[in-house]
Length: 364
Ligand code: UD1
Image 1: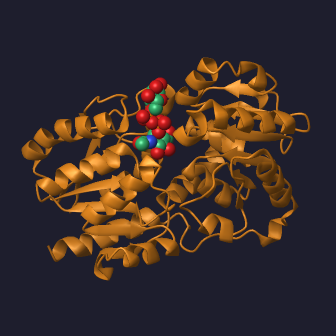
Image 2 (image 1 turned 90 degrees about the vertical axis):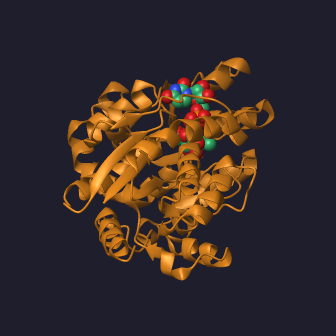
């Protein structure tokens, strides 16, 4: 059974690593890795392949950056001849980025079954391109792997056939559990940045809704500047955010932060696990901090990952000064022993996914 596995962006690499590993151990599956090229900078791309032992892609589309519509249409245009040539038995996509929806869409037109890993998550906010990507990808998918129970309810509500849905846990956790000790052993990030364990905050911001308008970005950075008077802030800056800070002339606000570029996986895991608090608008980091048992405040009005809030590791801080400060105060007061781990986030999700794919393939 030939399966094309799609990656394009940084979080996709973290999710695909354990799936590729499990597939390569099964003789019935011939995994083919396709990289769209949505992310291409060394530290957003190659370093993840090196650190996570992901094989070199069998095909690289090199689509690069662009607005949502251009990026999606470019990927569809580029992958279509590959599907024609390779004639896979299925195409597997992960997450909710433009590469995910574009490849699912192209495969559907060619009647190639689509497998979606991380199906069913919903923020109920269609102003996010990711929400649009999730809804479309799930509607086009033949096999849907869900990370948390809210995903099952969302898919039922949208009329997805229950036979297609499998609650298997979270592949990001597989990668985290496999690499956590290695990160602790090999990363020198604390020494490099002269940090002491539990004496700093980690900050990441990259959502267009947070960084593309000065009226939103400036107050967020100002409140974090306030927090930096109490505790050092380490800011790992996405290229989109770096450009915007420069364009809006906000460097004086981030000046007290320890500002660094996108980090390799092992450094990021080490940095987060020793932090006192993580402030983020990333989806994956809400999940990773849940496993690392580090308090997280999500700088957004909503989350598609409500289980992280139920388990007491994450709080929504919104995007206003007072709500962010309130969330920071509350999460730091929450007791360690009250923080839980979601069901099936046990490091064995990719194994379960491959088993389900094998039994599904027999029925095809
Ligand atoms: C994308 C995903 C987002 C995900 C994030 C993870 C979509 C709609 N968004 O957002 O869901 O959380 O990846 O990081 O798919 N750039 C570089 N180098 C790179 C990649 C991007 O400089 O290697 C810059 C370019 O200026 C580009 C901008 O970052 O225009 C945005 O990149 P893009 O892939 O469009 O979206 P992300 O913000 O990274």
